[in-house]
Length: 467
Image (cartoon, rainbow, N blue to C red; front, side):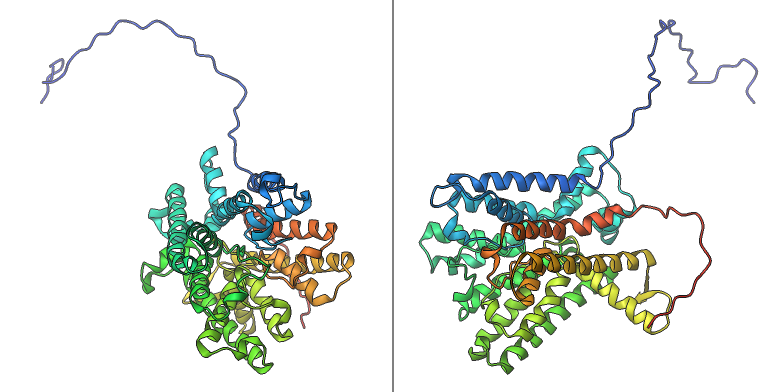
């Protein structure tokens, strides 16, 4: 037992001189931490669009070395950054190499997705993810080891660059057979980035997209596959590598939705074209399959091997819902997204079966996510209807071309009946606004939903008649 006052081994008495007193100034005003706001990413996009429009309007950007109309430059810049593909004039014929390079840079910036820009914004200001941030960015889909935003951004960039490089290398032999070496390399690079980013721009000339390759299956298959993978999103592709048993519910729904839309779209498109003996029905089986696959895959892009205006009405009506749905969340594609579509279908099935919640693969989908999906789909329908009504007021044209043009702008698809170059200035402005909303709308909806429910009480139930 230790005796009182006994010094234990290792005990050392340290004597220090008394420190001088210091005065610390404390500010009474509380410094507020800056947090990212939902409007910052749309503002950044608007700034990039304005800069792109300014560059495209310069004489150096056109082949004629003349100034490009400001509204047309703004329309093209918005179409490129929002990866749409609608154009007022042929890209290869109107723009110089400088102008094409500006468009390609805008496509690359826009194709990285609003998720990357929002993530960069959060990193720059040192913000933290809330529940809505994790839902939007898909952080919860990648496991506990993937909650680092920097790693998420690196994976997104790696996925996109790998897809673009692979598409470029596959297109290069075909491109070298079409043009001189320098032109071939540039156009293969341009088309690879356009396809991978679901942009829809091309340098084929004559405003004819890839209609000249209707009997050349190699390039359209390559670009069709690239577009399909780009529309899957990097989150889905990386989760696919984990094995079927470890696929998340989101991945399962996206894969089933994308494959189903592709197969059903191909089958119905082929049937409608064969029954009416349209141009595709006259091709050989291999060429016909390549064209049908390309058209179904490009519902998120807008490249085409046939003139949309020459398609049968049944085929056009088939393309409308495919365009409206679009691709997966956090991908280059727009639309209401496959996830929202699948959740809406599951909610409908659950309602018909008398269930109180949407279920899939032994999992219950939270009611908040179901309501968000229904909200996105409903807002899409409302915006489409409003856009069609406004354009019908501005343009003296039949309903179907106007409906198709409006949906192409809202869903960021480059398909058109050929009326884009002839639109009036107010219609050009309307289409520009629709492209901007279609690209950023889902993000704005996601970040506008509070992290936690605001109400602390519930009202009594009330009955409303349905049907």
